[in-house]
Amino acid sequence: MKVLFYTRGDYQKNMAGDTIQFLKTKEYLEKLGVEISVSHNPHEDLSPYDLIHLFNTIRVQETYSFFKNACYYNKKIFLSPIFWNYIDYIPKRQKGAMEEIYWDESDRLRREIFQGVDVILPSSIMEMREIGNRFHTNKHYEIIPNGVDPLFAKGRAEDFISQYKIKDFLLCVGRVCKHKNQLALAQVAKELDIPFVMVGPVNHLDYYHRCLRVNPDLIYMPNVDHQQLPSIYKAAKVHALVSWYEIPGLVSLEAGLAGCNIVTTQEGSTKEYFKDYADYVDPHNIQDIKEKVSQGMMREKNDALKNYISQHYLWNYVAERIFQAYQQ
Image 1: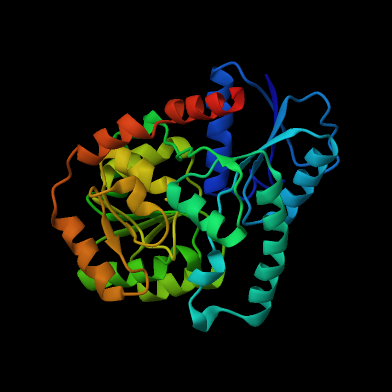
Image 2: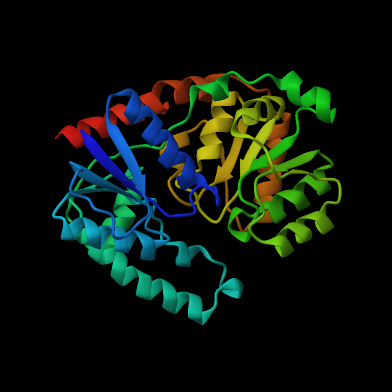
């Protein structure tokens, strides 16, 4: 089986959750014998491929050009949408009229994609419900959850502790930007007098400096290799991802498999994944975030979430689900 993965051209330079999903899906499908090529050329010759797999409808302009090329070649098209109605979650004070107009215009392209592909592979029932309600599509779909690599269960806390001399800290892994809401965590960590570590690229430099002004003691790690993350997770007490929304946040799966206590946003598909194993917060309620982080810091770590994730969300399981969908 020959498959083309169509994805944004900067997926390696501008690393995000969709990058990890894309790379791990590719890695584990190849272990099952699927022959996969990668392209971001909207004029790619698609004649050699049995089917086309598109990723991400948030940055929809590129995806739309890939979709149109696949239609031109009359190929079967699979879509991992990675979609949530982003515009509804921007605080009103930060939302501009031009941004709303741009989002509405982008929805026209999304609607054509969702109604034109052959199979949609949402990461949750809630994501598919969001797509169905907004774009009125009745296309065939298969729920394909996001996955996590088993290496995150094997970190050595000592590797981090020996270098940075802290342990049992509050951790947030992810792009530093307003959507991820690290500013609230910086404030909460300062008020609770607990160490706070941020890991990930800075998307908005001014926002990073705001976090630093609120909490000058925070530890920021910008260039962390993916192989180093398991040890950082292992040394942390709580991983918090209090974003405007998450679907569900790959880093929360990674942290949960590493044994962290999890605090995450209530917005998005998080509860579908983490059930009663996590604490959920209103991302706009600083007191709620403070209380949940404090509870997580006081609670002993245990293996309940780790075991649950191991049974349901490892990448080999996810890849098998996708492979079955391809074969159908």
